[in-house]
Image 1 (cartoon, rainbow, N blue to C red):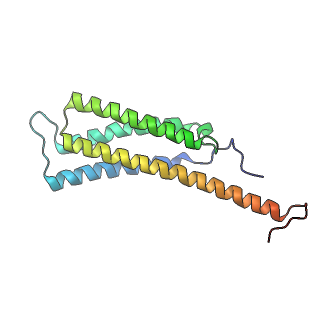
Image 2: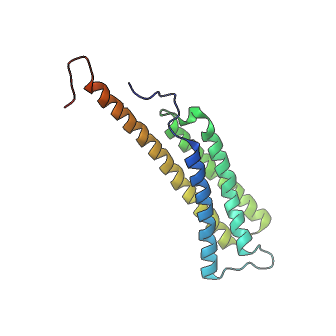
Image 3: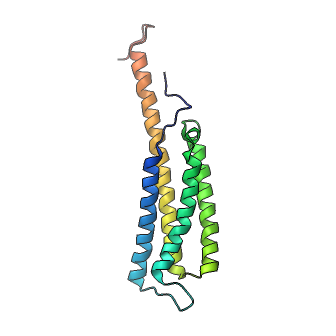
Length: 162
């Protein structure tokens, strides 16, 4: 007997924690680069800190949409998790692009800090989201393998595991 294909195999709490960590690390990377390179904004541009925060907010908006796609238990089943993670990642990247360009052209942030934060946070959210899905699928596969081993070891058909 295997795990039910209709049962969610991944909890959202680790994904939410990973997304928040990715956003914080993306902001830290942008601020660190800004400090090292002594980036400053001109009079018509936002300063480095607000620019980096604005880039991170664009990714935050997209991450919320991504988690919303994966929030439905049906999207986290063994059969659907892979395709739903690809859908959520694609939506997150497109929303990040749209929000980022909108913020950039409307707010005129300091470009280096803004795009450093946007790209670092966006890349980290993708990496953490992918790792979350791979770990969930791996745990599910291992559970199925253990159930199959236990079932064959106690099978009444005369076949016993060595």
